[in-house]
Length: 187
Image (cartoon, rainbow, N blue to C red; front, side, top):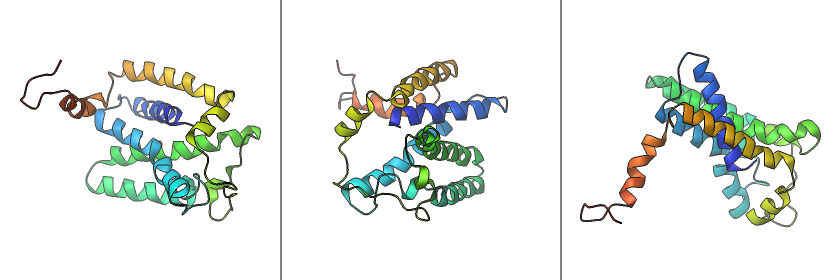
């Protein structure tokens, strides 16, 4: 799945979790969900595609053997600082990423062995890592890829209904990009 789909599904799961507790998502945990939802790719893809340290872009942090203990450590640290919600948010984002990547295995679309890597070996890239453009072109006719846009639309509607949580965390840094160094706004 592509980043848009991971973000959408993680947000929907987190919103469902918070609503089941009679609350709505808040800013910082939503940002943590977003980071968690992309975390496995942010680690594995560079290590496999550019540094040639991992056999594929779905190994180390896509593996539940690494990801579950990591999420437990993040939760323990967050709990230590009385921020359990942050640990839960990271766990929902990161774990949903790997499980969503494995979903096509249900209909024979991929091998989910990466969930137990290194106990279950994965097939290394034969001709080197694929380019993003190659992956995109191969995905265009895949219904699973197209479903990401449906999930994104649903997530956007839910995010809007929740008051766009997380946007206020990003607004100040983005706003500074548009300000004049003299202190005035640029046109």
